[in-house]
Image (tube, rainbow, N blue to C red; front, side, top):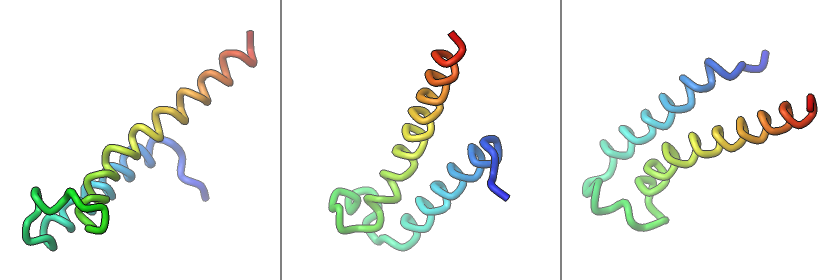
Length: 71
């Protein structure tokens, strides 16, 4: 069964946070070593910021479709 929006809004940040904590425990120089796109740390910091923006714009698009379809 496909997950609905409320469980996804909880699961996605938790998975992102778990990835962040994992990369913080694996990388030796965690804050300074996150500048290279080849490191896992860079993507673990990029993921928690990209996913909420992606979800927001999908919801914004869905809301626009719902509003303009009924008017």
